[in-house]
Length: 521
Ligand SMILES: NC(=O)c1ccc[n+]([C@@H]2O[C@H](COP(=O)([O-])OP(=O)(O)OC[C@H]3O[C@@H](n4cnc5c(N)ncnc54)[C@H](O)[C@@H]3O)[C@@H](O)[C@H]2O)c1
Image (cartoon, rainbow, N blue to C red; front, side, top):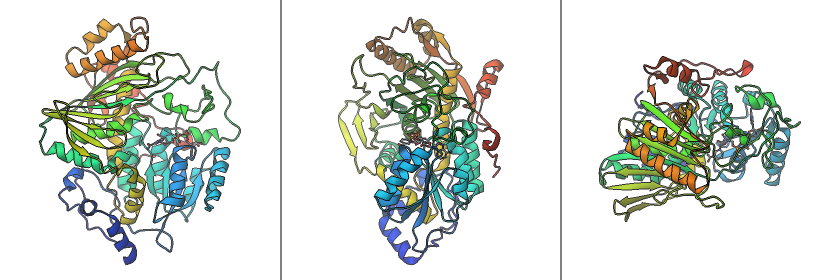
């Protein structure tokens, strides 16, 4: 791990902008920004890129932002940069689906903004009128589009996860280090939650003892996407080659009423996404790892789960437990896409949390909700402390600050890489798994009481959804060993190690013009 570079931070923008910026930053943020504050330890060991690069921007000091990928998440980014975020100006939008692009152009016109429009991201990057790009395309494009943007001299906000696979995420981190005149902020937005920062400090103070384990939870309803009879038609409005990018070029095999044949439901196909652990789950994975203070990959991973309750086109599990072996304490991640009980819409909660994180310490525990707020409980389940500043929504504004100050404080690319990689590693164990009886599954996890506890609750949850796990068996993955330095699987079972290292979620080099550039810093 590289140390935080302590080069002096230059303020190349004009004095008016600088003082406005200083006024907008809290003292704590400013101290973190300049890496001299007491809280700097929170970020110690993190790489900070682009500290001394000159600020760019239009004559009035606004940064000129382009948003790529506009259907859902990108629309929010687009409108925020068009109308809400001080110091930022939306100058361009990009989407290879001309229908989406036209709709967003019209949305911009409604708020009096006329950005340039691009169907090809590479053309957008050629524009000298763009300082920074926000990448809100599907996951499988994130690393490539980040690297291309850095090569083109743009600052980047890249949505989570950073990558489709571990290796390409590392290439993006290496590119950020090489092209360090530009900054990259990752969309793991919990990093902007002061409540989480404060709760981590609270735990670190030792007031509730040492961390025993951290559980990330993604209990979020995911319904069947239905079943098609085979290859489906790509919409005429979409340039499918660009949409596919570095993924394998295959016809879509899905067609849901809300998303059609291509958009959004790619999350449930391995060629593009990784299921809900990589979709919603990465946010909670990131927070759980952050609490552990672990800045790297774990030494082991093991997963079990399945796609239960319905049969549809999708490939990824809707129920998954992944256990990561970290030195400090285990990180357990649980995904549930089925409700509390068959026929209901409400989701289970674990210690009051459905989409969130629970950090169990010796004398109490912390829960983080999906809004980034934190509660500390004693082991008697009484609240000891509340953190509720609710600053998670500041992540986009923090990007504007990062571009102006030339330093990322919230959402470092390497942190997002590790959290994204955890999701991929969990999925690789699952993908190498075999269907097992409940008895064999219980045997496989008997050495670890935390995993056993997750298993027992998972089986109860499936039973409540009328899933007969004796008939639809659970897929149980092998316990895989990981070498943190090479970010590859290692171990004595050569066949398993070779299969794990060949899995595209560990490494995929890309496709033709969309090969992932390999950057050595
Ligand atoms: N931070 C969060 O809380 C949050 C929430 C939702 C989504 N996201 C992330 O945002 C991303 C987009 O999610 P979504 O729900 O809008 O997905 P979506 O599939 O609905 O939309 C993606 C859009 O990207 C476009 N696109 C595809 N290839 C492109 C390319 N080469 N260049 C530019 N645009 C391209 C598509 O045409 C589509 O319009 C995902 O990576 C998702 O994980 C983050």
